Length: 86
Figure: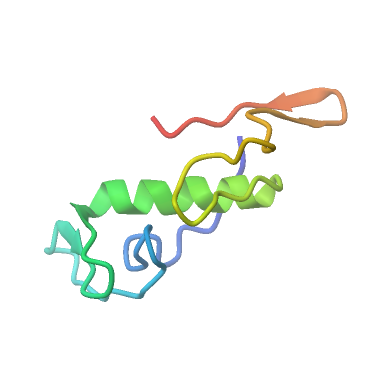
């Protein structure tokens, strides 16, 4: 498990990073820059996953998904880190 700061995870677009301010009553993330439309919680979950992956040194490509040379699991000392979107 990786602990990440959830600050702005529902405000920042998970596709392009653009800040899209919204009140708590707005349940859909709709980015005016890249036109991504997602449920607000799904957008936040993707941002949280990306922050966790970044913490362990796995960087997603701009088009999404792991690169061919990126490991699905990364060994940290004697412990395996398991990451999953859902």
